[in-house]
Image (cartoon, helix red, strand yellow):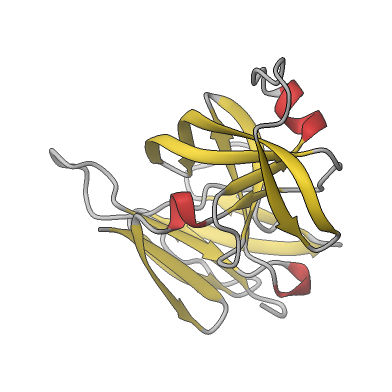
Length: 186
């Protein structure tokens, strides 16, 4: 967000301006696209790249736990968030036009997904209709929100991100304010 950094901490989202302390954090400077942030109370400075830091915030933990995810817009106008599939780290790109969570074959193999059988479906992609492996992921996690039994497809081509499609997103109420997308669990 220009010289500012959008930060989620302690259930709040706020903008940090260089040199101005807020909520125990101070944005010291930008080194390229990395924010150098000082944490009140000492310790080493944090080096945060947009979209790589924690992205989930929510109400105080109770019996229902964290129920919302906040994702700032990244370069190119895309909403990118770190997360995991079946406990293994991935980089998601929110894609409201994707029916299911989708990934390339290499990523699926890295995650240990079983692709031993022949493709069991077809999918329309930007590159045309392709054979896909359809499967159900045990868990999909973004920030601190984890869902179970999420439909996915694996396409033969490599993809730079795992597309966070509607098999995950449909369980949330989505809203966007300026450069921030909020996903609130239904």
